[in-house]
Length: 113
Image (cartoon, rainbow, N blue to C red; front, side, top):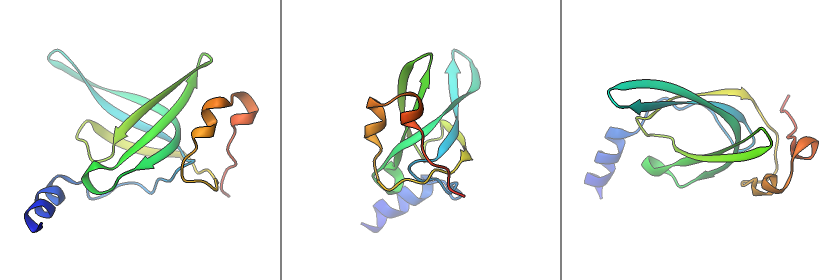
């Protein structure tokens, strides 16, 4: 087991931002197009945080042009360049899957002061 832990800790990122479910975040993702590489930003609300260790993921949801879009980002992936927090949300649940059925003002999350 120590060998597995040693391998996992080698690839984990040291400084992860303080993010929780309900926060609005900007995820900077590296996109490869042929020989070129660029960074694309995906901004939305974290609705789930799963697993732990090297396989930890967050699910980010945003609504653009009236259509909801969710993406799952592995936190320790080298393709995730940076995660920055736009605003902190105050929620009472670990998973915010109920936001899928809501839109407009009903999908608002209180801001933590």
